[in-house]
Length: 449
Image (tube, rainbow, N blue to C red; front, side):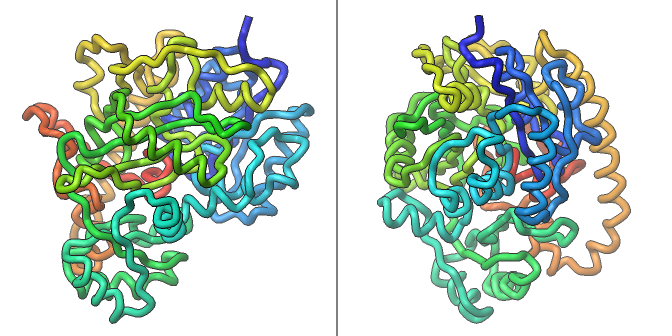
């Protein structure tokens, strides 16, 4: 008999257009295996997720940039088809922010954590997060918000080059502009020029002190804050390998005890009164040893299945159990367990894993998405290669603008100055080839961490 109330379906909402969002598949499988009817509101074109046997039905998503009213309309249509209350789980920042705003309007069709509706938007906004960390005494990279091009140039010198440049609300950055949510700026002139694109980006520019990456420096914490505020269903993890190297999403992660990261995470969510699923990214400063919070994602991280304990509890199941007033089982943590995203780290997926391992795409009880992923991924790589070859001459004519916009070199983000870990030559070649041939959109990066 399932611990979950299988009378209550789940609806996964994702607004971004990332067809390779393995976190969505993880949520589908986690709930579907427990007998829950799973509906997915996301773009299914070219996505392996649609082939999962645990998907009850795919529904068309709201368009990128949809208004809250349009998002509410989409969710009301889905609710009408389901015809009974469902647990609603946003799978990207834009969805989480919209659902936070629409909480009262979506009830009683959807079950949601009870918290201030503006809180997801507050923590996802990079400028707000800096203020939140300051008030909660959580280490955070020194952040300056320039109010003019001249101030941007001055701030870059003040922080010490290179510096990290971020758009405050990365979910608003439009596709096709060459802008990236996060880039490393190497000159004051680049900072000045980037500031001039703030209107195009849709939010203000932030400049942050640069914390170099390195072995054992990149960490994350996933959890679910229940109705009482207790954090369940997750834990601390170490990013062993990222794709691209040192940046973005976790290609290989390991469940690794870290009392400092756990204490910081629980203290922050308690002070905020946060309720629901969250995913935090930390970087340890090499000189001070302090863990700095880089991102607060008010939704499941793509590798949340890393933290499935001995009772099978993860953050998605914890949410469903809590919102349906069912007790959460007391499982035993499984440190040493690893999570591997095969299309970004295929060699790691083939190696022995004595501590246990879960793959993002392949599963013995749900093989179709793994098979579909490799076919679709090959087409994705070929398309990106053709685009890069076709655009090479155009990029050559405007090198300076491309660099300051973060389009070249590929993924010049705050984390790319050094690799997360030292890798063997075969692994280094594997990652290098992937980085050269493929490129994620900002939505893909933002929703895949």
